Image 1 (cartoon, helix red, strand yellow):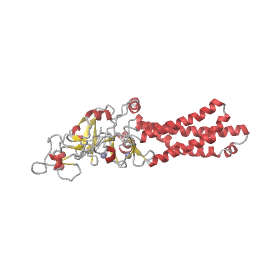
Image 2: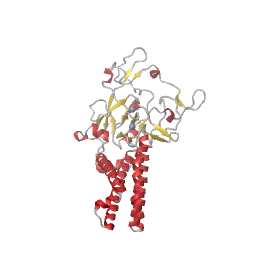
Image 3: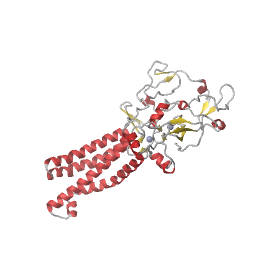
Image 4: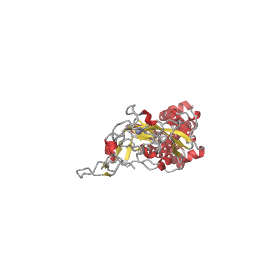
Length: 383
Ligand SMILES: [Zn+2]
Ligand SMILES: [Zn+2]
């Protein structure tokens, strides 16, 4: 759970004047938009969600009013009702999955208020003078995942070492676990906690397109058969069907292609980000554990709880370590001095701060084995 700034030392939820501190969502540093007093979190481009809902609901309403209603009269009573009920059912499922995708924490890693504190001085050389030598944190670290070396990077904005597969979304301004991509259609990052809903959303949208497209043709053929006219004349008699056929064909190509692409990504345990950036076909993928295990990991495991409690009160620090007050630790890109400090530096996850621990990281890897390494070249470079 997020304990807003800073995580070091004891903390209090009351300011010095005795007033309760604001809730976390009120002082959130990411670009997210919150609804219902922090109960629902959207991305910054939440307005695109309304456009997406409009693009889904409008053709369904036209289909129900001008096609399905006529088919109810043409088919026998039960079959006709089923056509109408099923399209409404798919639409409701589709919209529910859309809300589940865009209205929840996608897997945001809570920020640190300060750069992580080195555990020991092993391998470090102080470049400062006096009692507060300055330590420069290494830009990247190597960790071992399922027997392979993976490079993790330090995030300057969130002041933490990103867990493997985590990346910083520049639109939302958050580090997101298992970052897949930022979807402009749902206005939210797709990551560890909403990927399965996103995938089911694009599959159900594909199904909705096929359903509307198919029954529009059924209606046209019904007209042709009943009036014994050509297919072209039958189409002219139902312009709504022509519009819906064209309207559903275009998004079908998009969402069906996307569904197939993500089916491939799931079967090989890749994210879109990794597929575009790292090209696992040219190197071994440490997360790939076989098609069945990969699908099981994505769909038949519990969604991890959010690391953030947006409605919690911001906790104020009661004590700062001397090193932080004096600027003893500096982040990797704060100057070039102390470059030699990285040599032989041992990576330890407890330095990563932000409430992450070894157990959390292993869970994030789908029970993949993770160890820290002193040195070595990374197989994957997660930005
Ligand atoms: Zn970040
Ligand atoms: Zn994002």
